[in-house]
Figure 1 (cartoon, rainbow, N blue to C red):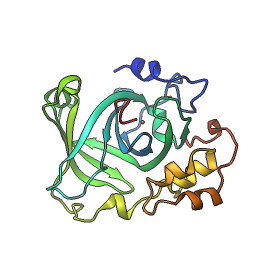
Figure 2 (tube, helix red, strand yellow):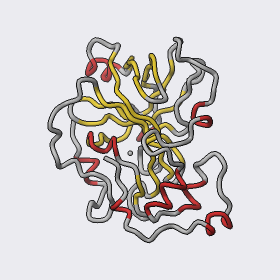
Figure 3 (cartoon, rainbow, N blue to C red):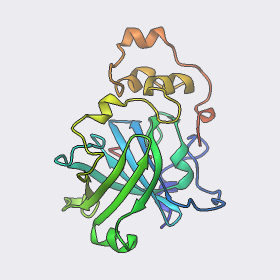
Figure 4 (cartoon, helix red, strand yellow):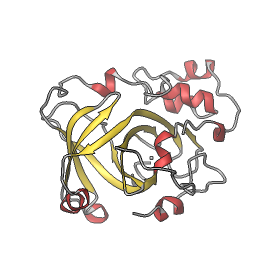
Length: 233
């Protein structure tokens, strides 16, 4: 596991994202799990699982579904540092992934697959989520990709259990799991593009509404509560 690709894509003199240079003091008893809602070029949800000192990461364009009959595309992207799991704020426009980031869900995960590395290599990783919003049994299954995406295309699927539902959780639970803010609120507090961020919220603000709530001029580097191909970011 390496963070070289992650670091190559970012200018840490500009972006408030963690560089991953600080070594974590002690591993979680269970692996960290987080989903970050990210309004960059397009809205998507970054699904992350801690493994071997990094966060394995997938970009899920439509977000997770609690319905076992629904298969969500999940594009595997570069590993992220573990402390990225607490990042909530604004990546400056013009930087890789420029836009607003929300910690949409967080908690821990435990594998159902006996050998995680072998399951990842095979492309069939089963696990339990213990989050604030997502719980129960899930699976990530690799599919046949196309061109440069070959091997990076997966499906995120909910297993049938007591936590399965036909409710659209991305619609019913739009706020941050840690700060209880919407994307527009996060952008406003960090001096980001409020109008753009609001398009990722349930009821997008109009241009007039966004102008009534001007963004603060504070540096985005001050907003970080402790992450897809470039097209997704």
